[in-house]
Length: 386
Ligand SMILES: *Cc1c(COP(=O)(O)O)cnc(C)c1O
Image (cartoon, rainbow, N blue to C red; front, side):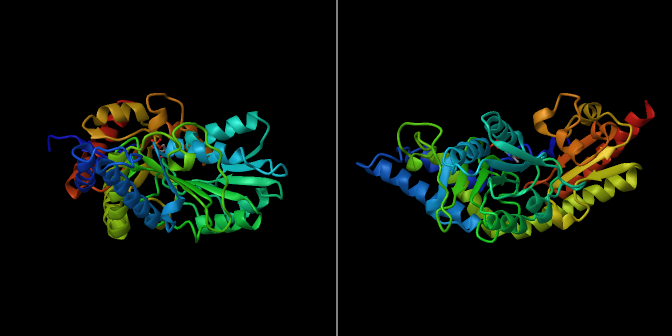
């Protein structure tokens, strides 16, 4: 095999050809502005946006009217957390999150803390889980908001969202969920999980970069959101600016595909992930898996491995034509151990020996076999030169 093998699906994914096909008309002939009401160009664009809104809603068991298009999960997280805080009732000044969230959640929450909010940062257990009991102990009558991700971007931990949502709802708190890694990979249901706000990102599940969505609950316990940006009034003023019609059409198609193929794909990708792990383990000793031991409680395409005595950055460099990540993509290139691995108690010397492999829709068995050989060979070499 003389091409690059891509095993970094947590960082981003290739665009599915079906998604590209759904986008092309809106880059070509149907290039209209979805806000133009006086001609067919605008009508066609609006129709595409509303179709996509239904497709995103369907994937989450939400109403189309509860979906807002954004530029990605970072933006959706910021609008949710900062926008909801601006409308919080005076008697609720407490927010709960966990230490293994993405920076797109932690940084806005730290900003709120600086502005006077009380912030509780829960530490997950050694597999990355927050239990309903741990959340229950942190909740009180002043808790306004809980932000817990659906699935972790480094170790793949899938949180027990139904239980966490119930606990938050019982305390009268909102639940925000960063579902950037989970959307399109595992089943999400804003009703059964009592989710108030949810963020997702197109480029994590085979739609293009720069488009995402925000779910905001209107049914039942309606969430009030103040906009962070002003002008134009699009998306009910929550996310003003001319809509990215081709990107939105692509995101809708990605959601349609996921709704239809999620289960089958999860099985296929999960099997490849298990093959990859078995192969590596047969070839080299002293390999630890970070994250949940139970494969059903982690993302099907996730494999975070630590190789005792091997420098993670040297490993990434030596793997050459195998594209993977050391720890988190955001901290790649810096030798600090990942804060996620640290939070679940991985010793620093193992955390810096970590390879994050991400498998996905276009990963083949042939690629997995190739990756096994490359990893065994490279880890063996690096261990011998120590
Ligand atoms: C990728 C990712 C984000 C950021 O999403 P963008 O669309 O790239 O802004 C946020 N949270 C998690 C968990 C992610 O994996």
